[in-house]
Image 1 (cartoon, helix red, strand yellow):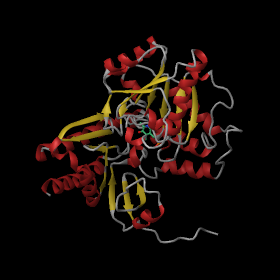
Image 2: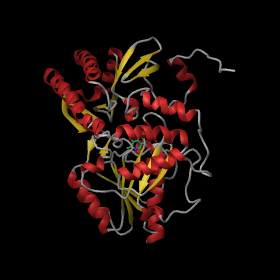
Image 3: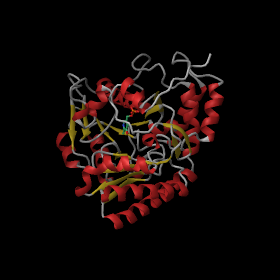
Image 4: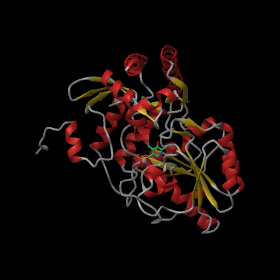
Length: 406
Ligand SMILES: *Cc1c(COP(=O)(O)O)cnc(C)c1O
């Protein structure tokens, strides 16, 4: 028997969902490419990509095809048994990156939790149980488990939940001298987003990333890159470390990996992986055949010259439109980020208006995001069409004019 449909609206949210979100006033019910429709049939252009997740747009035919095919074949076996999609996806991720070993999870936080545990465990087994210090950065975001909010650099997300994991030090992002001042031989890892996403769309400088690599090598610490948001083509390269001429020891990715289906991966080297043994870490759902089959299809499409090279042209179209808007309204102090992870920074006199701009944009029919209090964030599909960008920017312009005039 089919599930019984009951009527639900945005108001239902307030009555049934834990109040940790403040969702927009409309309820999306359908998506195709970079267009979304709500319960009333109103159309939106999607510049939010499900927060940098739906990198191939909504309901991409190849992903739908894989979902249906694998859905009729095998969904879940647990890690008591391995499965073909996971083995194929791992093999392809290894071929495309620095890595030799993969661990699959279901979310970015889970991949990071595994990464931080691995960094500590490796140091403990290879060096000393006292080599546990993790260096991380102000404004960093690594997920919502207690360990990942503690490594994250925003105390508002980690305060109030009791004692935090110890031996985590935060210093300013892009400040190599600050890292030098705290790193020592008891440091097991530096954890960094090559482009801070939630923290305001802030790219690391090349000197900073190369300096972190050198400091890690000097102190036998691991360089852990959180590419949950910046990975899977978003920067115009498959992973953004490729922009910096360095290689990490551990890398995590999630968001776009499944193109909208929950899946995450932690990648590392054979040497680091070799301290692990059966039972040391694990997850029930991680690496399930359904998620891995879809991620394999997403990777096959994203990791092609056509999609990766298309990112820069799309960025250009976005920045041209944003610059034109800025010459009209004098509202942005900077357009920053890399590839299709873009942040339009509001001038100080408009800094408090991000929320109003998001609401006005929704009213005009375009979905956008903020990052921090004063940055408008655009993380659209990597294959959004020029026509969709144009239509969305026209609506965004109307929203901005309305907020500025108010
Ligand atoms: C979103 C994000 C996470 C957390 O991912 P979840 O899937 O929400 O657990 C971690 N790190 C970065 C950089 C992110 O952008």
